[in-house]
Length: 159
Image 1 (tube, helix red, strand yellow):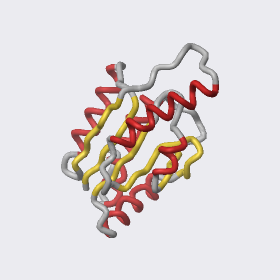
Image 2 (cartoon, helix red, strand yellow):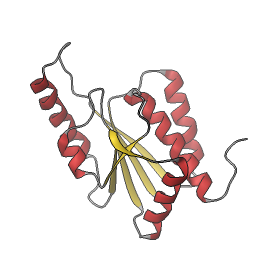
Image 3 (tube, rainbow, N blue to C red):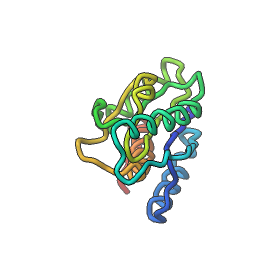
Image 4 (cartoon, one colour):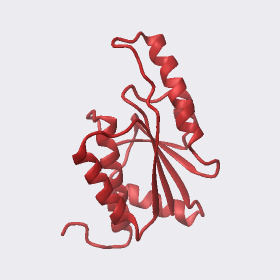
């Protein structure tokens, strides 16, 4: 399976980049994973609703441009559907059985996602009712993808 994570912005914190790198390495035997970073749209200190909408639209265009046409698109969204680790594992298995071997996750920037990105998605996922930084979500997502493959194969996760 080919999995892409398309995300707005770069990660600066070393502890996050180290954690992400570790899970990307662990995912090697299970899938081809790539992380595509697009430029995060800049906004003024206290943006108006109109400024936010305009910035999200521009950022959304860049995010969607990075998604292959053949890819199954899932976006991480606060108002998306919550899944357990087991349900995510089953979802990845189901997509594979249906012949969908190309999957893309989109993580928006600090202000979320444009309506266009939400509409383009086949599914919208929520990790929690809690709010996380978009940078922290990237680490959580690669960990959950790794966990999903381990669950699918009946392999122990905790060591």
